[in-house]
Image 1 (cartoon, rainbow, N blue to C red):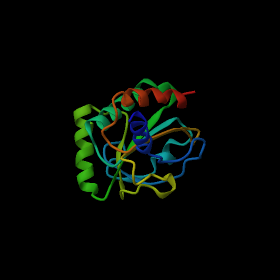
Image 2 (image 1 turned 90 degrees about the vertical axis):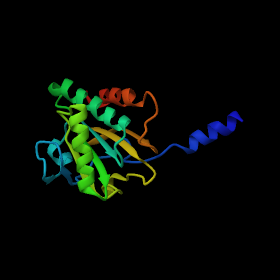
Image 3 (image 1 turned 120 degrees about the vertical axis):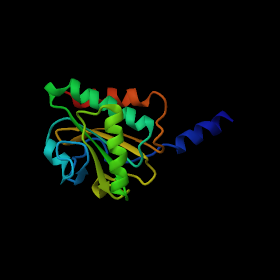
Length: 173
């Protein structure tokens, strides 16, 4: 029976996003809460070679909102290292998505991380976001992927939020 449980856990793993070491590419989002609120832009382009954490999500859960807050805190603490981040809500309904992001920004006091929407649940094609991934977190430095973690459910497993926030150390060198 234990072997069966292990096998079930293994099949729950999701591969999503760019492989480690892969260069990032440009894609546009609509900024909802950042300095360019209301405009379409490429944050990947704007941030250039700086260390960046990017959360792609198809849904906003309490765990995702808490992760956003943790990353927001990390960005605030690492301004000297020019750390940046942004959140990309993958949605077919940008207006509804914008309302959810505005609520998260207010409820969690997000100050350093722009919350954005991408038109379409598939996400930017070149980023290889799996249709089976509810959340894909990628972090890069010098425009190359250093961290990639994906989850089938937006209800992240216990301990994952802190673990992901700790992964920012990999891009801050």
